[in-house]
Length: 275
Image (tube, rainbow, N blue to C red; front, top):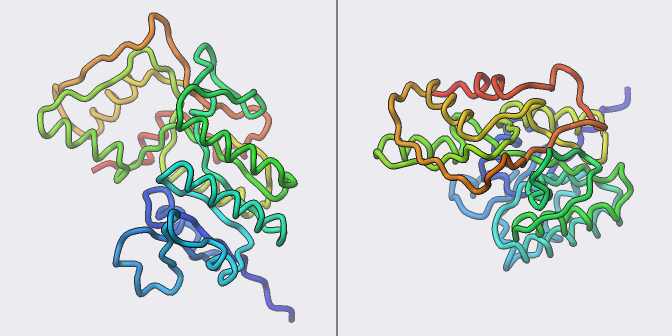
């Protein structure tokens, strides 16, 4: 009987919040590897490789692991990220491997009058959005089956940097900034990792908007989280950046995932298991 091939996955930035959660989600199902920049806890793990974008050569790791799928959850210097992703694109061209790139709603931050869908034109005013667009453009040189661009809204989770920051501000009686004129959609790490797992399993490519199917004002969403956290009378500072509602939301329209992977912002809060 022919042995079943176990797909190899390499997560770039596996020591970060999203990358680490993806590793935990995928490692029981695939031959999963990751890179880390800091953290001695990974030094003796044969599935983790130290990688410094500004000084190390990713090609050495790619040649050693020979991944079928590369997931980019990198953070750090923009120019170094761009160069690293150019190397990944060249690797995918040569080997037929696939890259899954975690992009951002900020690729649309120049458009504030409406939410954005998968095939809308990207345009950003922020350095962050512009650098994400540059990498997206490079990936689109590949055949669609060889890339997935996952555009993400704000990502929450019980141990996410955003929740840790919110708790810190509340517990230290500092004013936490909320934006009453910002209309957004959201996700959390548990739902996001399941969606990406599905994309890998089904081997589907293209552009995906992986956020809640509904919209919510930033201040209202934060207030709902604070209630779940059990805090009373926190200090909130309303910051208005416009006289009108401004949208920063990535909604799915053409590349929708199955119903069990669709959710609203209430499910994002419920799935967090905040404690």
